[in-house]
Each structure stands twice: as C-alpha cells, then as structure tokens.
Image 1: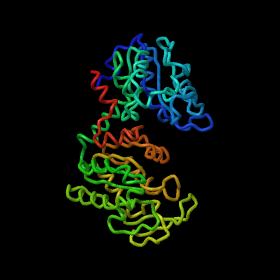
Image 2 (image 1 turned 60 degrees about the vertical axis):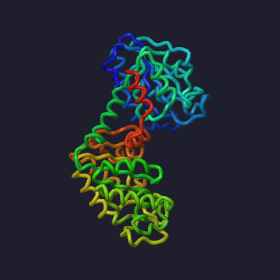
Image 3 (image 1 turned 30 degrees about the vertical axis):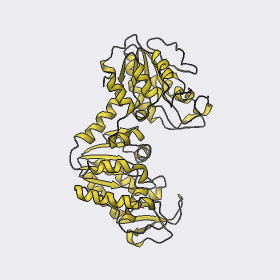
Image 4 (image 1 turned 45 degrees about the horizontal axis):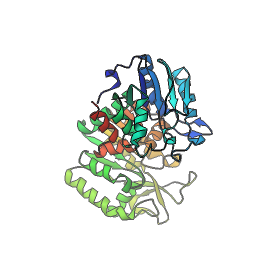
Length: 388
C-alpha cells in the first residue's frame, strides 16, 4: 500500500476516511480516544498544505435519512478544540465541498447517504470526485465493503493509507507473522460462537491461548465442570472440546480457571464468593477468575515474547468482579514482550486501569482486528493494494 507520506498533497484536495464513531451522550462526546487517534493524519495533511475533508460514520441511523442523534456535530466541536482551528460540519456535501488549502471540514455522517452500506458505485464515484487524493485511515471499518471504505478507493484518482491504518497493519503483522516467542493470546467475551474463527486461527499460531468470560465457561463445561447458571453456550461445548484437543495436538495450551469469583445475581452490588471450579453451587454464576487462576495467568503473560489481547476475563464493569481483568491488564503492561490490544471492551479496561502508556499498540478496531487475526482479506486493504 502507498501511504500519505509518499503522496504529493500540497495544494491538493484530500479526503480522509477516519473512524470517528465515538460514544455520545446528551450531545457530548464521552470518549475522545478515536478522535485523538485520527488527529495526526489530519494535522499532517494540513501541515503539508492540503485542503482537508474528513468523513466518517457514527452509530447506526436509518440509512438515507438525517438523524440528529447520529450527527457528527459534537465531533466537529472536539476537532475544533483539538486542532486549534475551526472545523465546520458540512451537512450537504456529496455534490461538492468548498474548502481551501490549510482548512479542514468535517462531512456529515456518511450513513445519512442512501447506498453507503451497499457500496453503491455511483455514490462511491461521487465521493471520489471530491478529492485529488483519498486517504483511508479507518482500520476499524476496513472489513466493510462500503462506499466510503472500499468503493471510494477504487474510484479515486489517487488513494493511499493513512498513518493510523498503516500502523495498525504493521502492529498486527508484527504480532502474527514474526512473533517473538512464547506467543500468548488472550481472548475474552461472551460467546465461543462469535469468536470461533479467531480461536481456531490462534491455535495454529500461539503457545498459550487464554480464554475468559463466557467463552471460558463454555470451555469449563467441555472439560467436565459444572458452571451453575453462568453464561455459556451448551450447543458449543463439543466445539470447545474439539478446540482443546486441537490445541493439545499442536503443542499449544489453553489454561482454564482453577478458581472463580461467583454471585447469585448479575448486579454491581452482588455479593462475591470465591469458589474452586469443582465446587460451584447450582444457583451461582461465574463473573470473574479467582486469585490462583489470576496468578497463574499473569505469570504466563509476563514471560511472553508477544501478547495479543482481545476481551476481558470477567465482568470488570462491576468493581467487585474486576480483579482478574485488572491483574491481566497490569501483567500485559508490565511484560517486556511486544503487546497488542484491540476491541472496545479491551480499550475500556485499559482506560479504567490506566495502563495505556505501557502497552505497545492499542488498536481502535474491533471486528476488523478479529478478521485480520483470522486471516480474512479486508476489502479496504485489498482496494488499497490494487490501487498501487
């Protein structure tokens, strides 16, 4: 892929596809992480004399209709503050945008345009016609073949990757293609079914595969344990058992919890109880890993050469059940190995426990992160490679 550093953008019109899909409450952005991650690309284009247009989606509005709750207006306010110059929000932009070199404008939510999700060819062409250079910098959307992510690249006069996207790909390639050993992956989440393909892909790559959350509960059942009323997937127990066997055959290890923290209700004020995995009560649910398991997993993490982390190991949103995820976050941060973390819940845990500065790379992507790990081709990356 070409990158923006290789492009002549002085006095050129540059259209940047950023990922500004941030949480908004009461008209205010509640987390600026994705905006801040996008700033370097926008600032570089401005510094090099470009007339800059930034586009993004936000939320899931009904396509083709304006929805005030999904407007990028609050994002424009944050960009104005962060960049130190006005960033106007352009509501009707698809037929042309007035912007001069050294200026930056934010284009209203691309999902207000009919045909965005379907990757409508005519819409993608109109987007491409706005600019001399199209910069794809939203790795989090690279797995979607949509007008603003893939189609616009195909129709662009010139297209390239932005620094954020290029850095995400480089970090993933470092972790997956040439990992320092031992390689440890941490995969948490509610369901085996939602992460089956990434679990299968990682078994072929890692030395240790740590599973957490509802995924770990399903694996515990596969190993012969009772999990009370814990979140798990009975229909996927046999699949989990197969994955345990495959890991053993390939020389990988899936270390399962030996002790857990339970409660009789899913609530932040629920009373926590410590149990060995063989001594769960029938009315209890597993909400976190116990101290023995935590110590064992942290030792594995701290001796790793490469760490790939996606998903918490407990219900860390409730402080009484966040001990395991907190310890995992700290172990990842303290490890001397190369660490790569991605996914919304993972980022939330990293922010909660204040370890961001000690993790080598934090991906803003969720679905794209997982699909890249699985080895799936991402449409936007394919389009960028084809445009060279």
